[in-house]
Length: 186
Image (tube, rainbow, N blue to C red; front, top):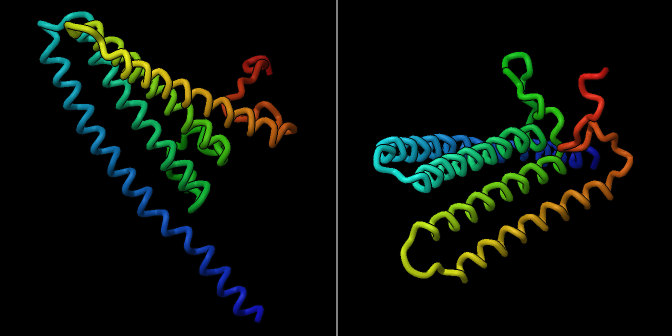
């Protein structure tokens, strides 16, 4: 019976590798986003001579939005792979410092923070577009965008509070997004 149990455990443990194609697919999505980023950048550069200040701001916001989304995808790839599949070989890579420190709770917080930032950019773009369009703005649409952003913000706050309550004894230096007040003084 023990051999049967070990076999089942080995199969379950190795099943984590079924996540690897998901992370490879997300890595491919980064290239798709790079293509879209380059299209937006070229579009902005071509439009600059005749662009208004609002056009430039909207173009830059679109680039920032794509960058934040790409950061979000990268965080999911690195943290998800390290937390659920396998550790990266540290000797062959220029390893970002945050990778070793992001646990599942930290991953949730980073995801929610990125979603809130992306949402904020979408709200700002909508307000900027409203200022540029003739006629009456669609206040219902703007209200929905703001409400959704507030919902994301509330969700982030709930995740942070839940993580702090669930692990109150964790030192501040190990908590995601914690700042070390004595940084540089030690």
